[in-house]
Image (cartoon, rainbow, N blue to C red; front, side, top):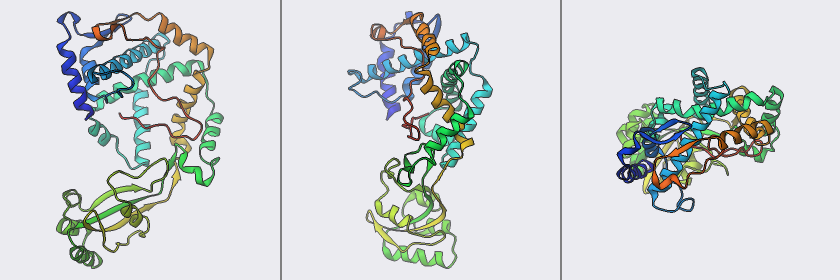
Length: 349
């Protein structure tokens, strides 16, 4: 859906772009924001809420995208000027960190990128502004190991048992499910008898499951997290599936139960207790969060960012946006960090 919105916006704006614009949507201190990059960002960017910018949708999305591209370019230029540009090694380290965090959440970076329609090369480029921001902040601000450890302890050991789910580093209880979705109770019971007699689950799923995805995957559903106030239930998965999944012991096969007009039986292949991510794994994330918080009140950093903003020479080549673009202090558009241990809102790649 977001790609469709971006494409519609792209078509509308392309019709309004005279050839005189050349190949730049804007220039920042003499450096071009390529039209190709602008168009591509439009394709993969979700539309902004109508209450933020007035319609049409093309202008809502386009204006937001252009503002972000200008802010990112200012940040990259500032890092270069300060002698701390993002390096390939830093990009590789950031990706390795992300992959490790996703792995602990039973997720895969490549799958997420494919789902978002983003190539690996585009993702690597998208990391540069955030790394540039960290580099600039780190030049003037030092975060000690002790500070990071205290922040981690506050977000983990310092939380009461009934508040653990609020930690950004909390991994909830989860089960790896296999299912057979049958048309009738009789078919589900027949499938269960085969499983109890030792027939491999993939074979049973392919023979009895009426759900094409279940058949194709040999019954594998994957990891299912126990819902909590922060990590809510997945839309489309009925409550009775959650109830049965977390009341069935590892290795056991449930009795058939009805949901959505079908008969389901499931097997819990693996069970994982709730836990926190290790300190060493999340230490770079804690450092970035503390840097952002500290930078907001750091006189030297604030002065540096304000100077970059006021001295910026920005030319916008899209008439609809020329009078609307507001040059802000260079920063990665992101949510400010919440209190220690509060999970930040997830964002797309």
